[in-house]
Image 1: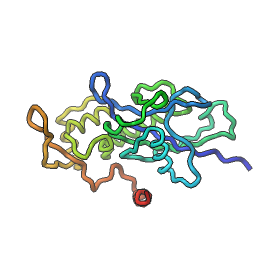
Image 2 (image 1 turned 180 degrees about the vertical axis):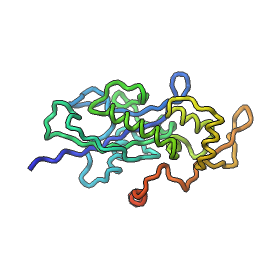
Image 3 (image 1 turned 120 degrees about the vertical axis):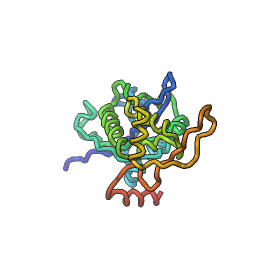
Length: 237
């Protein structure tokens, strides 16, 4: 009887960080491998799936053990298991990775563990990563940018209250392009997911801007029939 491949869980952790000019850019956390294969190369954080562990629990555990982060948003992305994921390895050592993607706020990311083996990198400026992790990041970026248009995923990068300018800054950082303020306001108003709080941001030089929040009755993203299953798992934690 042929041996089954091992299962692992990896996570693409996105956040927004200011660059040298102060502009917010999309970044992700990587870890440096300390063993073969690909020893010394950067890779996505992850590890083996425990026998008695749910997939989402394993993703959360690996993420916390590596970076100290507890994301606002965690979703299963895809399964990666091509035969050439680890060139030169024995077929009996084949590993299938269940990949999750996570979103964390800038303030939380600033508290993440950083060392010579754990660091943040600009999502669009990556060198060659271990295994097929460049492909995984490319797919995660594609999913994030597409889902941002019709979900409230931007909330994963924001606090509970925010201005429209702060919300637009998230969209511009994720999409990698500037957006017209007027058109953006009209898009947000038409979407209906963002509601005014009746409060204004204090401490500004000019007229304080309006503060908004996301409608809490709308999930970050529509999980369809999986929603009830996910909610049950969350209540167990």
